[in-house]
Image (cartoon, rainbow, N blue to C red; front, side, top):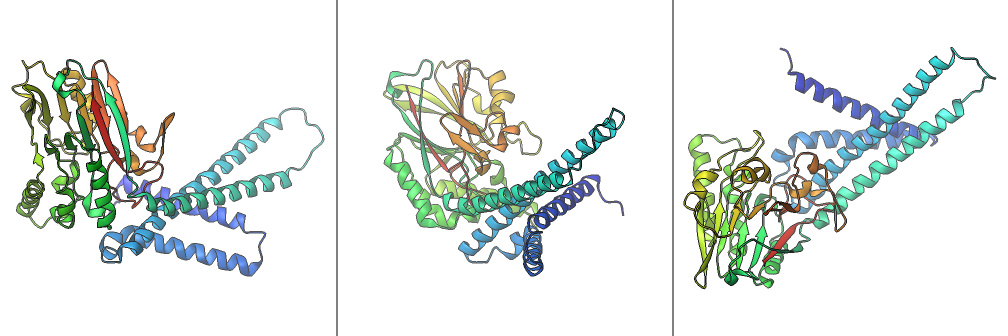
Length: 417
């Protein structure tokens, strides 16, 4: 049986990472005694075996473990893998340096030669330095991933003042809370989640908008937290849409009927919490005889990897002749460039989530960076094109890695003017 090319490439990359990270360890400890080298190598190999077993079995084997232990183990697995990748990168760069040095020597032999000098000691010194740097950097990343678990409920309030064209006087100063990507299936601390909800209510919002991914896969994941999220109240209502995870596409269902019922259960849970789920439709929000339009679409992505159930044409129908501000909720920010800005230029504000900021990066006033920006042009914060705005919330919850590094969980307060 012939293995798929993609699988063979993946195996090759994993083997290369293992090889180079092992070499880095050996170079870094070669000055130690024989017993110390044996113990360190043994511990490293043991951790490697545990990590690789954990990578392929944590979903099935670790789900019943105590929450704290599971979080620590997952963080260690992910941090250890990233540390290996960092170490392998350092060692690969050192090998590339060696290659270019060798190529230069081959060319230089054709040129007039001066007195021959040995650079063996220098070469060993450089390699040892690279190995030590690889080990140090990898260790720092492992420690950072472990520390990042303490940030998973460290909610950050982001305040944004936004001017919308022809905003009715009655809506000036309107306070909108925008949250996204709750991922209730990842939670393990009801009290911490409740503190985030309390922070939202402290802002006394006029309107609360949730832009999808309430759960990871199963509707039952939100059940332990329904009472908490039911406390979200606002004079103009709480509205929500679906994200890619809400459809249950990443779960192995025994039948299509069970998958369909899961979605219906999720819709009912949102209704039970007092949330109005918008399914490719719009509502007109009234205040003092004036109005704005709130549009909600199902998940729609510019990438074929994610579902495209969103029907903006249907959701927008009836708004064509209304010269009022229009706010769109669409889970995936790639929708903005792909369709909204091209065909719906009178939609003033689009609210999205989905990216999580990859839960890793830098987010300070003068610098925003995350690896996710190489996949999503708009991935965190406010973006503007002509008179249209997009705000991407980096998420209330977390998934996969049970923590956050540099990209904290977000509650956005948008004030219209």
